Length: 307
Image (cartoon, rainbow, N blue to C red; front, side, top):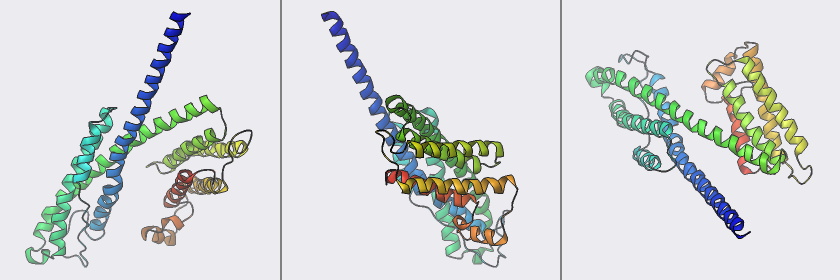
């Protein structure tokens, strides 16, 4: 019996060590992802806004100097922290060549964009185009377009890599919950969040596929029903009304957008004006409204689904 006991003890110890390593790797991966997402959250929106600002007055072929209104562009925040954080994160375990390369490319692209936007902002804010007949503005144009294109490509690539890892982790978490608890309240809440993201991706795709949208919607709606049935049953916790309300509101908006896509219903002039003015979340059956309701759902999840 003693040899068996020793072997069992060793096996248990190895299992514990493996679990500890897995837990440490998860924590380290979270820290890596937080560094990458931190760059995106701080720099991406402002970078895209700088491009929108510029093209709100400049022609796609570039400025002429004859524009009625000249706004220039926006600058972005300091990028040095992003570069440092990416370098630190890339050196951490667990290594992932794809996301590390994407993060490096992002840091490079946004770091090149920063000084160019500063140079452009100085030129336009000081109205130097009045002195050189827009000569520098014309020379800056192709450089700006190239820098924005490079940034956008790097941004989308990094986002894709982050999403892929988050998707994998979500599925792993769901499997762990099912294994340890079965399909009860917590399982259906996690499944609901996974399905909600699938709906968002299907409806916000460049070329929406109505079959894929319909399938994602049906699965999401079925998961809501399953979550309601599981809520408070047996020894499981009860799902709060706030979270369920957000989940159903998101479903309504997703169905409205699905019907708009399926039936090819165009936005009205008033809808377009509202969306162009930044009030797209007020337009029923719109992508901005879908994004708003999805963020509300995520906020409810983060707040705690028992509320």
